[in-house]
Length: 274
Image 1: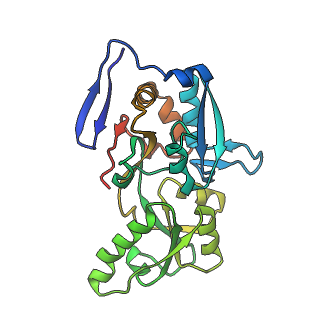
Image 2: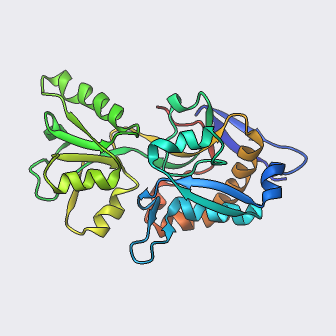
Image 3: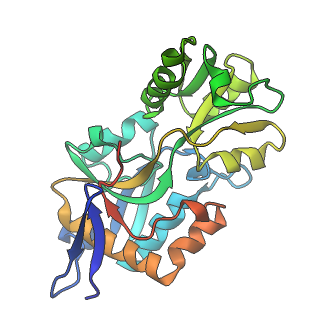
């Protein structure tokens, strides 16, 4: 087989070379299907097309192409973001590909194969007086409660507001990105935070409504999340993802959603520095 390379822990390069290509676990092969669940409120990663109500998005396209190459179908389901990890742990999902960030705190029971660069980013309504991130000190900033973003906002506030004698950012929780944007439009919060990969889509859907403030204030990766004891599935998916990167089909999917700049050069295992 062609060697597959990916990073281990974001540092050491691990070359996986075996005499035989990785194979699907027998139970999945026999079933002929992968069971995947997503939180369909995180466009353009996964969402319901408002005109057709079909489940679409970058992650959906990537997963469908992986399944095609694996010779199986996908049985899709939907769940709130907070239930994604429990769905994996209780084996209701074979793996998770749903806009989920690779974080060290999530690696005790799972491994990530990172496939998309990301980072939290502030945005406001276009007519907001805020021009720079520092203008948000003391302001109400909303984000999805079950993501890593509340911790990232608190960390940014301590380093940029409180350390400079300014009032802390007031974090306001939301159920999902749609709820947070609605809070912003209703004037209940002054600014919001979402992953940088979602904001171009939101701006395109509501032209002239939102303005990005500053650059992403931390860096990381989104990853396909696997149970640690499911190394065989992780390896075969990594192998096919690497092939998709090599043959250009991965980049074509990212370009379809305007996220070609978020591409990675190869699959990376547990590579996020957070």
